[in-house]
Image 1: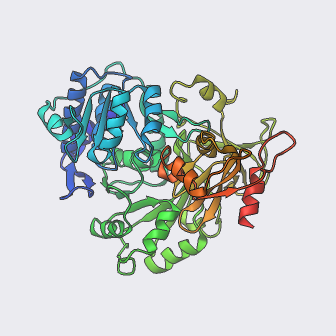
Image 2: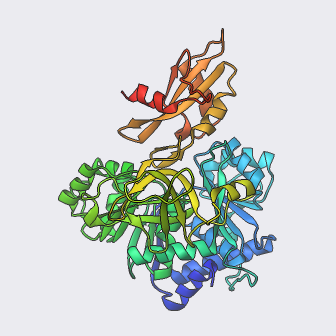
Image 3: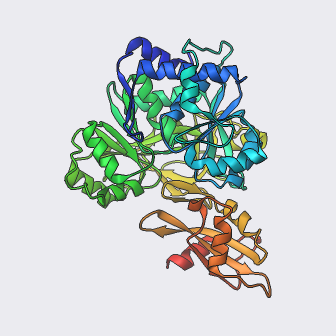
Length: 508
């Protein structure tokens, strides 16, 4: 049994059960499992008529909406590969991705028409659009779907190790790596999830982008297996989230700390009734204890916290609600089918309270990186452990703590930001001699980028000019908030820029 069967099984077991609510539509879409499966069959039949088959990539560029799941399940029925694109990326960044993964068809929403116009002028391919008129020659998504037959579609040759989706991780060398999410990985992550969290008849509100592992795989897929209801919104809106949690009697909610902070500032926070929630889950960064205490005191919320990543799980660690304050700062204990260890530089296992590299092993690991055998081989050691690049420790009770994250990465508003990718663009500017980008604490976003720049002798430019230069080439969330012009950068004896010194200089 593979992912494409999930909706068909649900149509068999609970055809009239409410499966999905797309609250981003007006009026909201409310789909039963029968309706959802028939839509996926129709789209799969159309894709098949266009020559899409096993292993072919089909891309989607759109904010959250049910069309993402239409495509995900249609691709799964064909053995094709769902390829969701980060809509915050610049079209030139998307073109780099296209040239690597070579999608056969692109589905997009009309608000990204300008990006698609640029993309298809450099990489021609058939397109389907929704929420507008689309570019010249583009077919309408809903009309196309409804015109196709809803007869069942299956891929007889599909194996559990075949790739169901590509999820992009931030690229440490400039180009995002595409983690290959197999049918096997999704099934094992679901088992890890339901052991800890999901029960039958849960109602889950998803606010994570559908191009993230959080949007597709944290609770959305487990919900389908267990026959629950999943709610989608177009993009995070604190007031709307609170309204939906109350109106739809949501039982499960997950977000990053920045979102939880924003919810408390919404105009309807005080009157919002969140009593239907069994628990809330927080990930992406440590959840501040005062915030936990505020939710507990004012709304009676029980918090689960955890840690995950695109390449593994994503459910890796979980911290139970009763430990939220007692073990503040911990990412919790490994999920049931995850083996987590701490190793030294010689790859030897370390004991409690010893800091070292966090390594993971288990059946919910991805199959590697698409079209990147070197990165795939480098990520796993001879014993089969995936090296996360994080420095961590665990205590005597088996609770893990992240001591330092991946060397240079920082998290801004829940998004991983990789400085090397930004620095690469800075070096394209004719006035820049040296640069280093670091993440600095920010009360709203968690962290924001600061660029430390050394200009070439005799060259001149301004902070505004540099930031404009970056904005024309990078997604908005990657563009640093500030530029500091320096005479020199701190350099180690080995010739490396000492970013820790820069962070300390600007945070002291």
